[in-house]
Amino acid sequence: MKRIYAIISALLLIVFLLLARGWLQTEQAKIKRNLSRLESLLSKEEGEPAAAGIIRANRAAEYFTGDCRIQVNGFNITGKAELSAAIHNVRSTAPGIKVRFRDTEITVKNSGSAEVYLTATAAEGGITGETLAREVRVMLLKQNGEWKIASAETIEVLR
Amino acid sequence: MNTKARRAQAISAKLKRILKILTIGRNPARTLKRIAVTAVLCIIVFRGFLIPARLQGISMEPAYRNGSINFINTMAYRTAEPRRGDVVGIQLAGRGVMLFKRIIGLPGEKLGFQDGQLFINGGQFPEPYIKTESDWTMPEVQIGPDEYFAAGDNRRMPIENHELGRVRINRITGKAVF
Image (cartoon, rainbow over all chains, first blue to last red; front, side, top):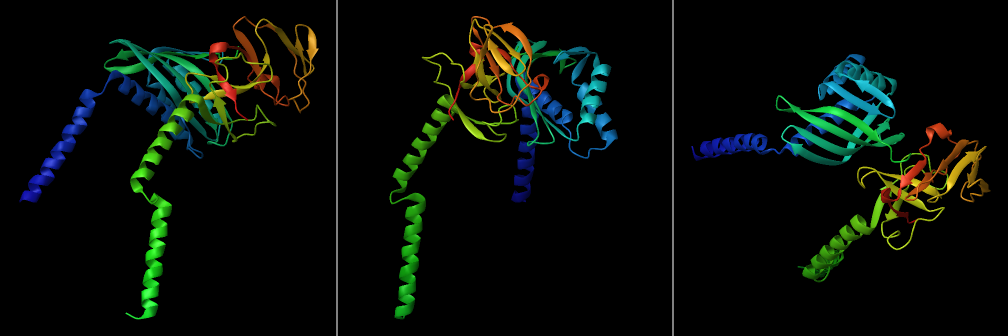
């Protein structure tokens, strides 16, 4: 009987810790988690089915606001639909891409907006392929309790 | 117990002692202290002064191969300015990912390329570190007072695929050790 009580107590403790994790999570942690999910959605495993690619591109676009503005290497993208198509196009041209966000520095300006500086790297065909690295400034807005990317622009370090 | 068994037991005990000395030393407390000091020193040195870097890409070939390991000395420019020919680490959002380039232009200079030849302030400038043929052509640019011009060594790459340009001094993290 004592053993059952111990198991129930342990389970309750795990449930409490999981709930507490959600309640205690800082805004920075929420943004970091979103960026981590986004980098995983932008990455592509070799041999990924075409249908999965479309789904992942649409899911990646969900992390952006409806009227988002993206300026990457001189290319301008406006709106979620255009962004989703652009992500799909880029992902479909390479057999595999590994996207990573490094050196992330998050500043929550007030309860509704945040600014992030990060280095985005994209390695074609896994770690051994060519790697592109860009510093990116990202502005986020909180919409219905979720952090969404409102704008992202690359910063030219070598001009 | 016969002599043979006793000898085997003695050898086994000796081997165990040697193994113990080899792994944790004669004095385990002293070994732990040494490990702790070494770990702290490694963290201080490799996080603060000598940043380890693994090169990715071919822009610095043939001098620096894709996948090779190097270190960036962050103390190099504390007392001196970057010099032409120095290979430097250029910081992006942080020190986790850096660009690895050679300084070819200094503050205030005018720099351009014509048929693979580097021109500085209107005069042709030899580049002894360039081992490959090049057809790079780029109109002259003015380097600002707090800027340097950085480029890779691999001039076989088309210039449009190569990352080069003016970089602000505060972006230069340090000098490559090798």
